Each structure stands twice: as C-alpha cells, then as structure tokens.
Length: 127
Image (tube, rainbow, N blue to C red; front, side, top):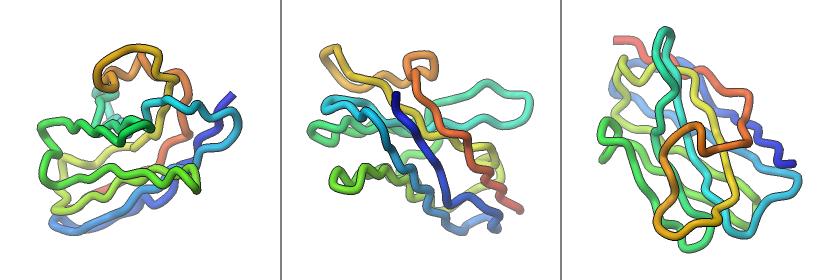
C-alpha cells in the first residue's frame, strides 16, 4: 500500500502562483510514475503532469505546458507541482497519484492507470 497526502492548495487571483506538495509513504516502488491530476465540477479527471521516479522524465498536458512544473525529491518521497501564471480554468481539485511502472516508455497519462490516490486539494483561481 502507498499513502499519498497532498497539500498547498488555496485561492489566488489569476496570474498568481501556487505550489502543491505530495508526500508519499508506505510501500513506495523503486520504479514508479507519479502524477498530478485535476477534476473540475462536471468534468472528467484529467492528467496535468507526470514524472518517472527513475530518470525524472516528465510530461505535461498541453494546457499547462510552460506554466506548471512537476518535480520530485526522492530523499523525502515528495512530489511537487509548481503552478505559475494561473488561470480561472485551472480551478479544480488536484490529486496526486502513483503506480508502479512495469512497462517501457514514458509514464502513462490516464487516470485509470494509477491505482493509488491522495485525497485531493482544492485550487481556486479568481479572475
């Protein structure tokens, strides 16, 4: 079992920044994918950014490229999402998720590929 706890959400005005943190504990895998997902009211959960624990390969949704940065601190079992130039459409509940990576290629970006999830943290961007 892997436990994930997000923090750092809040309310900011458009153009502002927030940094989300995700603390992982329990049986963390040597080779894993960590991802940030978000879900706005009435919408499906979507991938925002993913990072591979080995090598640090990252991938971003087109809507956040150039504005968001995912990073990890292996020593602390932490994953971060730095969000800059925030827009009202970034408003959502943000979730941290992970799965053991047993395949070749980059980390998958689909929510259903991830089997461990945090409780989510609300991000609200006002115009």
